[in-house]
Length: 264
Image 1 (cartoon, rainbow, N blue to C red):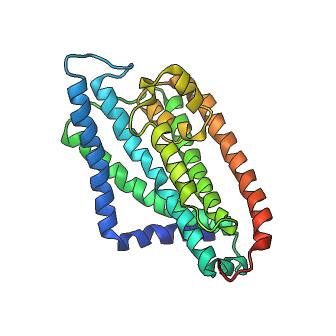
Image 2: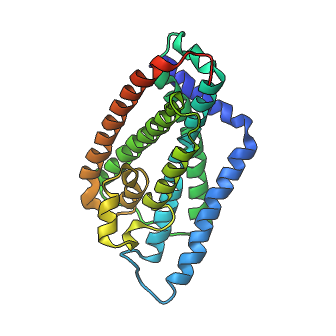
């Protein structure tokens, strides 16, 4: 475990070499919150609440979801594996004494944690700069569930992107799979429009998918909403992590036999 923690730490430090990316990512996070601030300021004009949200509650949700959206930075693992399989360098990980999945997951977790840290800084700066009354849950147990759900959501997203990278062992390109995943995430995580504003029948369908529990539900829990879903949501995302691992193991055992190690 220590060597994988070292891998994560190394890749966290490596991101400092890409200072422009870090700055642009923070600007993007702040821009999203600014857009929400201006948009919902207009929509809430003359209204006390919309869909159960007050104006500050809605801004709190957007700040939390913008921060947690950093979990999707793990998409890089798909492209990394795809490139290494195609150029033949993936084979070196099959002969060195490491667990390939743990190595790549540690690598990408390091990147994700790095950007989450800077997203948190951007969110905190925004709250103090505009004097936003951040709405926060007052229940320690709900907060604990939200934190655990966030951790499991991060693990699930890295698992999913690792799996999509492995599909290169069978398919020459994975761009279509990534596009489908990204479109689903944009809709179901509620990063564009809170799902509370959707019809209940639509939300119930989205609850069947893991993305609901990656960003949307933790954001709602942190802002004191949907607290009745805290425990059940935690169990659902935990089950999805187990299911995803079974899918990864099955895919690896099935496809690795056809890989000759010289690229595609």
